[in-house]
Amino acid sequence: MSARGSYDAGRFHDAYDKVMAKWPPGRESVTVPTPFGETYVQVTGPADGPPLVLLPGGGEATSASWYAQAAELSRTHRVHAVDLIGAPGRSTPAGDRHPRTVADLTGWLDALLDGLGIRAAALGGHSYGAWIALSYALHAPDRVRRLFLLDPTQCFAGFKAAYLLRAAPVLLRPTPRRTRAFLEWETGATPLDPDWLALQEAAVGFPARRPVTGPRPGPAALRGLDVPVLLLLAGNSRTHDPAGVAARARELLPRVEVAVLPDVSHHALPQAAPPGLGRRLSEFLAGPGD
Image (cartoon, rainbow, N blue to C red; front, side):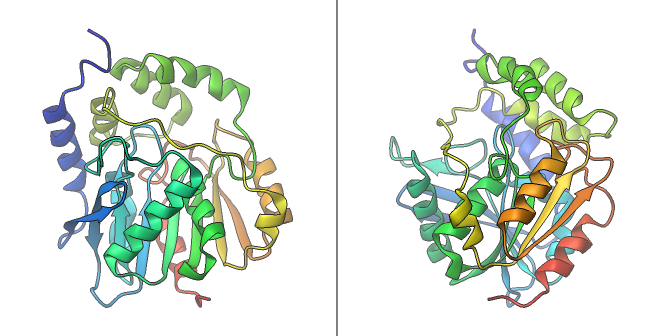
């Protein structure tokens, strides 16, 4: 039996629920219809708080990955953590109509915000989710008050060759064992939550659609982005060169604050982040919107 044929939906949902139980009390789940299918969103925080939309990384990541930051962020914001459409999670694509292009992705987010009744929001993402968030900010800057990017991929630099070489077996022939070995290699000495790691393993073989990919945003578009941006890079990231990413972002983004988080790797974010990450994000989000 192939790895994808061995997917166990019950095991995945049990692992998903176990991580979601780490979220603060009062969380609710909503399902929002869009032209590309039903999008599942975790919602927490004061009902009258300014909205914050969180996008997880790619691969086996889900909205559950934000559990370690949810309590701090929801103190002041109405947090909406999204399961990406067509990716592991509880969002359900509408048959064959799932996002295939960057325009589809931004259209999906337009429809999601509309369905949530959000005119404009702060937007945050990790890894692939940060690429989606930046793409959306370039598409609809009037709907993004502030933007934070956690170790974004394909935004300011490409992947390291060594990372792609290590990732290839996981992408081509995924198994739970390969997924665990890859995550442990990339995260190094960073302790990983066993429940979160079990969720990554359980998501292997999920009937996901091919993720939307695209070129890095062009220099002219980035220079024209008049939105406050917080870029936080993983100091031990094996995905790309943090110093190179920081330099490129400072060169191109007119309103960016850049910092490198020590002693954390790409895949350890956002759940195994250094202490104080949630507070730092909250302080940034408390700034004036535009």
